[in-house]
Length: 440
Ligand SMILES: [Zn+2]
Image 1 (cartoon, rainbow, N blue to C red):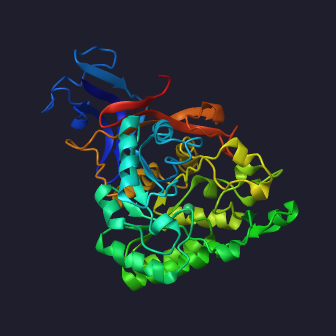
Image 2: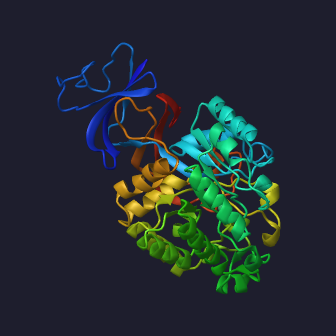
Image 3: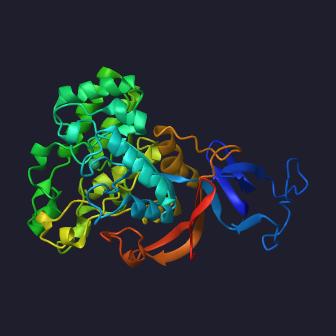
């Protein structure tokens, strides 16, 4: 079976931007055809046909008025399997990813057991293949059990398929341990993802330190709890020359530190998540635990600094930090509730708002949600003949209200329920097969 995607604007930053038809065959991109030239060279099936014309053996997808991009890649998700399948499974998480327009995700290792050896890595990759949804590229733990005391079997995990090392969910508190991990991973040519958090400064806090926390009587977490560790790991990056990627950046001070480090030529990169450029701690109303995540929603000054960082390129990527939690873990007192929100099925629409508000160009957004994550995970996702057909077709015009009841994710813990948004994935294709199509 061949698939012909017709009528769309194809946008692959640095490679392609224009009206093209894409022919997919045997899981790969077979040809990119110019619709204005129906007799063009290499034209196997007459792309001049209108979408409603049937061609034997060819499934035609009418993508008129839509854009086709290299598949979105979410570099920071929690799939919860093995160990917490009541929150999410690899299957449900990867299907939620496909619905969100993602063709691949990087899964964090803080499962039960922790992904700190090749067997767990292989389990995740095998389960991922069975999902027939988005692909999974696991990250493995830096330290055994992510306990921060001895290095995990990073080489074994690399052989099994991890693309990064991180103790995400927990900081690597011991600086010497982090130095050793960076030196080791540099030798493996593997990036380390940093969960930047000084636990002694968090000290049991559960939202941003500031007037809102004072108003609600909730213990706060200062910006420095994040930026201190960012500054430390920039220093260790410059000491070792290893690739350091900072996860879910939330504060003005962190962004400025990374900006300066990049100016000095340090091997650093970073991501933020849609909630950090969309919401502030003033959104935390009535102890609604759907607004509780780690790091916490910050001040308006921080939100604006995140946007500046996205615009000037200090922030390389947008990731959801998809962190499903059950109702039981969320419908408790604010300080006892689990940190984290789901994001796979809202990330694209929330990020497209930056384009609608003329903050980022669509090209910039595709760079931050597809091309840069691909580069970090060593995936060649250029739209070109011979590459796997991992594609996302986006309807930029459709307007709707976010409804958690429509989520495929097992959990509905989102602060964005009822929010009006514009734009969503119309179709997600992985290895040439349609893994999500709207209304199907
Ligand atoms: Zn984290």
